[in-house]
Every structure is written in C-alpha cells, then in structure tokens.
Length: 257
Length: 381
Ligand SMILES: Cc1cc2nc3c(=O)[nH]c(=O)nc-3n(C[C@H](O)[C@H](O)[C@H](O)COP(=O)(O)OP(=O)(O)OC[C@H]3O[C@@H](n4cnc5c(N)ncnc54)[C@H](O)[C@@H]3O)c2cc1C
Ligand SMILES: Cc1cc2nc3c(=O)[nH]c(=O)nc-3n(C[C@H](O)[C@H](O)[C@H](O)COP(=O)(O)OP(=O)(O)OC[C@H]3O[C@@H](n4cnc5c(N)ncnc54)[C@H](O)[C@@H]3O)c2cc1C
Image (cartoon, rainbow over all chains, first blue to last red; front, side, top):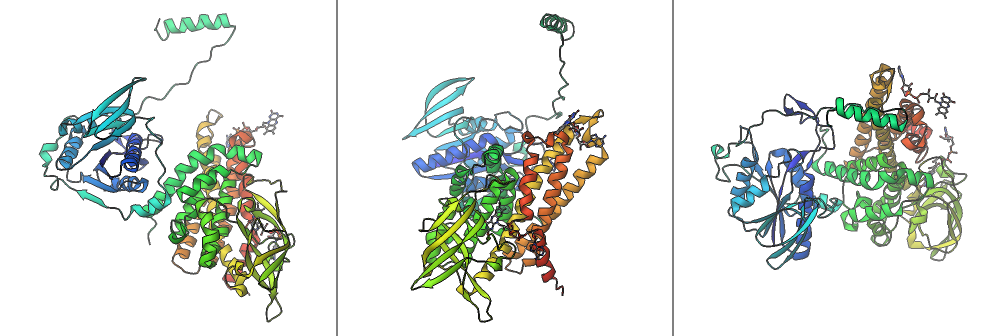
C-alpha cells in the first residue's frame, strides 16, 4: 500500500507563544509536529504494519522542518519529502500550500493520504481538503476509526459529538481526529535509524511551479493573543443575599438578563 | 567547537522528555511516599530502547553516544529522582561493565536482558566496612576446582531485587606486592546462598530499589569472572568514572525540575502587592540557579564528549559529578526557599527534590572522594 502523510511543523501551543507586531516570535517558541498530524503518522504506520507498503511523510516548509520530518522517520515512516518554500517571498496561505502539495502528488501513485484534522497554529483545517479537491479524490475529515479491506475503507467520523460510519473507495484522503489512536514514542533504535532514511528536498522548479501561481488568496491583517482573563469576583453573605447580588450583577453589570 | 546538539541527540532528548513527562512525573509523588519501585515504568522503557541507550547495537542497544545518555538521565531525573537513580545505575553500573569487559557469552546471557528491560543492571561494591575505601573490600572469592566460592556482605546496592545477576567485587587473592587482588564476578541472583533484602528506609530516591546482599558460600563457575581477573579493581574505577557522568546528569535534572517550579512560583505568588519574582532578592536567586545549572550541564556534556572521543575524562567526570551534585542541593534548597511555607509541604514536590538530590553528593563517590580524585589528577603532592 502506498501511504502518504501530509504533515505541518507548528509551534507548540502548550508552551508560551509571544507575538511582536503581529508576528510570532519564532526564537522563543518551541516547535513540534502538529499534534493532529501525529495521529496521521501513527495511523499510517499502523496501516503499513497491517497491510505492508511504504509510508512517505510530506511537508511544505523550510529547512527547519527537517527536524519534524526526522522525528516522523524515527516513529517509523520510510521516506520524507520537504517541499521547500525558500523561493517564496510573499505571504503563504492554505492555497499556496495545497497547490504545492497538489503539484507533488500529481505524478504519484497513492492509495491513501492522511493529514491532521486541523493545525493547532491557525486552526483552519483547509489544506488537506483542498488537496483532495485538487487531486479529485474522495475525502473524509475528522476520522476516529479506520479499517481498510481491499480497496474499501470503513471509517468512523466524529460529527459534533456523534459518530457517523462511512464507507469509501481508495484512493482516499482522510484527516485525523483525536481518539483515532495513541501516537507512539519514537524508539531509540528508530531514532538511530532515522538519519539513514531518505529525506528529499524539492524546490519550486522540481515541482514545475512558478511563484506567481502560488500567491496567497488571503491576507493576514493582524495577530494578537486573547485578552488576559480578569480576576473573578467572590460573592459573600447568606445564600439568599448572594443570589440577589448575582442577579443584580447579571442584570446591571454584565447586562445579560 | 560546536555547542549544538546533533539531530539525534535532540530527538533522543525530546523523546525521553515526552516519555518522562507523561509516564514518570505523574507518579513521582506516589512512589516517593510509598517507596514502591515502579517496575511498570522500566517495562515500558525496555521496548523503547531507553535501557540500552548507549549499549552496542550488537547486543540490542541503540549505540547512542554518552551525551545522548546524559540527556536521557537528565530528563528522567527531572521527572523523578528515584526512577532516575535506578535508571542510571542499571545502565552505567550494571550494563556498562558488561558492555566494556564482558565476553560474548556473558553479554548474551546478562547484558541482553538488561537492554530489553527484562532485568535491571546492578553493581555491588560497597560493604558495611568498605564505602569510600572500596579497596578495603572484605568479601572473598576462593577458587575451588573450577568454581569460585563467594562469602561476604554488601550494603545499599541499587536494583538487586530486579536483577538477573549482580556484578560483585571480592578479594580473589594476593598481588605480588602483598595487596589484595580484587576481581569482579557476575553472580546470578537465584544462586544458592545469595540473600537479597530491602531493609532500608531512605531519606530520598525512595522509588529506587536499595538492597542488602548476603552471600554465604555462593558458588559461581570460573567463567563468571568479569573482565581481566587481575584488573578487577581498575575496571570498577573506570566504571565509576562513567557512572559519575550519569550522576552529574541526574543531579542536573533534579535541579532543573526544582528551578522551573521556582521560576513559575515566582510569577504566581504575590506578596506585598507584587509577584515575588519582582523582588530583586528572588530574582538573584533565580539568576544564580539558571547560571549554575547551565554551567553544570556544560561540564557534564564536556566529560561525556571526552568519553565519546575516547579521551581521558577522569578529572572532568569528577568535576561534573562534584559540581552538579553540590549545585543541585543548593538549587533545590533555594527553590524550596522561594516557595516559602509551601515548599516545606509535600504537595509542591520541592522537598522531595531536595531529599532526592542529597544522595548525589554521596553515591558513586562522595564529594570528598571527588576532591581527592581531582587533587590527584592535578598533581598535588
Ligand atoms: C541510595 C544509595 C544507593 C547506593 N547504590 C550503590 C550501588 O548500587 N552499588 C554500590 O556499590 N554502592 C552503592 N551505594 C553506596 C555508596 O556508593 C556509598 O554510600 C558511598 O560510596 C560512600 O560510602 P559510605 O557510605 O560507606 O561512607 P564513608 O566512606 O564511611 O564516608 C563517610 C564520610 O567520610 C568521608 N570520607 C571517607 N574517606 C575519606 C577520606 N579519605 N578523606 C576525606 N573524607 C573521607 C566521606 O566523604 C563521607 O563524608 C549506595 C548508597 C546509597 C545511599
Ligand atoms: C511547619 C510550619 C509551621 C508554621 N506555623 C505557623 C504558625 O504557627 N503561625 C503562623 O502564623 N504561621 C505559621 N507558619 C507560616 C510561616 O510563618 C510562613 O510560611 C512564612 O512566614 C513565610 O510565608 P509564606 O510561606 O507565605 O511565603 P511567602 O511570603 O509567599 O514567601 C515566598 C518567598 O518570597 C520571599 N519574599 C516574600 N516577600 C519578599 C520581599 N518583599 N522581598 C524579598 N523576598 C520576599 C520569601 O522570603 C520567600 O522566600 C508555619 C509554616 C510552616 C511551614
């Protein structure tokens, strides 16, 4: 089975993130594999373990993303590909990235492409669905269970707290949701082997793309952190008094009733 | 000179950090209070390759370098000092000498199970009357036919309850100059006459298994001698030099854990209308802690690097162990101070770190012994 994962390097949202003049301070941030993409990598390796084949992890980014690609190789992926954005001067958005991925996949034979449900940095959930559209293949998002028999995939999807069971034909693109699996730790022997596995870098020329074709369709106007939470207010007195005070506050201060 | 981690070193550190944060840290308090050895943690570490991290690939290890190993010990120590001690002892003192001095057959029989996580490594040098003065070993091994008969007592031996064999030092004869000849023996823990108990109630590193060994007419075949029979003592000194790097790394991990908690607390805790981290008295404590931790890490990594380059590292390993262990006690003590009364309470985990780290000034050569080693190395009269 030809298994592909589309992966994004993001900053770790569990660590402190600083924004200066609308730009995220990369110096201070920790970078990780987008957590939802970790589910995709894990599922890809499980598929390989069950059905045989090969797992290739693809990312769009700069040289720095090699770290995350190596981690994916250490987890058990076989090959890694970096679609290098070095030649791009302008802003990039989901359009840019899915166009680059689309160009890469054009001449590839794939049975399944896995991605994360969303990236935790911008939370858009656009890239993978756009890629499936571009390739003209089936797609199912937010999956929590995957079984493949022959060329048919049986999939459970998370639909706002409910489950939906769907069958789809390969080739197929899926995006992975929490609950699908528990990503493994890369093992020590896996880490040691990772550096010997192939990691290819392709630039725009290799992809037969021109910078003008990749111009972002959106523009980022500003970025800012949510306002800091203000300290709460503690009501005092007898229960009846507290209720009265609460109603008063909801009516006159919060103006919600 | 390059102060950057290699990609491999960074990946190993990140993996062990993730593992330690998720699997070890959450039970650090429980295993400290109960003194329970977290067997299940070691069962998980085996398949991930953590227990064979610096061991040759030929015997199932990952063949990683000593810097990677130091990073792994630091991360585990940051999560739990007791787990860190058993880990470092298994790798440096148990697996290390087998890897360095064992025969192929010995490695297959005793090293492979340690690497796989089926058994822990354990090393028995200390005796009731031979601590710092390890040359004063009283345990004896007498050759009778093709078997050695071992008699003696060892105290405070880490990991023996969970070991398949303990490497034990014993007097096996006299040297030409009349001094005792000390050799190392691989003694299977199920050998007849080998009694292992856990009679101690420790101040810290309480999760770590600490045992008393009594050997009464324990017979081992002649081939269980480890390495060169005439150089047993020199082998341990070598083993301990390597072990010192790991104790330095462990102290570093505990200090880092305490410092991070103190820094966070200095942001949260308000007195006199401001976070206490606004007061210069607290800032200077934190500044000193950050500096000393980084200095210790640099020394630990330098010693590890020298070892990896197959250069002499005795003095640097003593520097690293001595500085990191004393630094860690200072840092944990100041971290507790920054926590005020809260630091004195168990739930904040700081008092545990202070108790745990104190051992680092004692085990694998006390601070005084490190200073003796350094004095000798720098050529004092
Ligand atoms: C939790 C724990 C785990 C351990 N694990 C192991 C293990 O796995 N294997 C093992 O073999 N041992 C182990 N040990 C033993 C440890 O290595 C010894 O405790 C240590 O070497 C010190 O020996 P001692 O306790 O007999 O102290 P002593 O040697 O009696 O020293 C007492 C004091 O005198 C000082 N002193 C001694 N000689 C001199 C001198 N010449 N000059 C100046 N000062 C001196 C010491 O520095 C110390 O301050 C462990 C100990 C503990 C507490
Ligand atoms: C076992 C125990 C028994 C106790 N018994 C009693 C008792 O019987 N009665 C009672 O009233 N209290 C008692 N206490 C409380 C004790 O007096 C307080 O813990 C102590 O005064 C410190 O206060 P704190 O813990 O709130 O620390 P904090 O005041 O929060 O201090 C935290 C850290 O900040 C430092 N700090 C604070 N302000 C400044 C500043 N302006 N400049 C520089 N550094 C600063 C402190 O020195 C400390 O290092 C007890 C505490 C314990 C642990």
